[in-house]
Length: 172
Image (tube, rainbow, N blue to C red; front, side, top):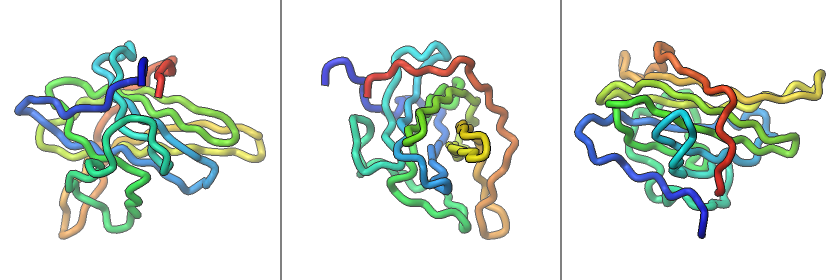
């Protein structure tokens, strides 16, 4: 499709980290989350990862490539429609945007973090609806995944920087 963002391609570098972008579907109002990686915090040259929480895809990485074998936490349900795993360059900050669509409204969040070589991360997108205020917002949390005592632990020691205002001008 003319004008659409190209699908994400794994960088051809030796210094890689693994990242799982994931959607929390607990509020049941979220219909789709479009997920992008861009090389800078100016939102330019965005590459489409996938539409999460949806069986309809408009571009992005093929379904067969969503699971690269990352560590999985025992208490987390990993629905293949709700996540994608990718390898990223750990020599630079990872800039990303997640756009959540619900029947209430869209919410946009752009953020970045510095991945460390050979580490694994989980980026969790959450849509929060507050019925008493008739309002909603979205947030992301970044966890570093490590093996610990035969299980996988989610460590919250990865600082993220949120971009204000978020990126919003993507085409698919």
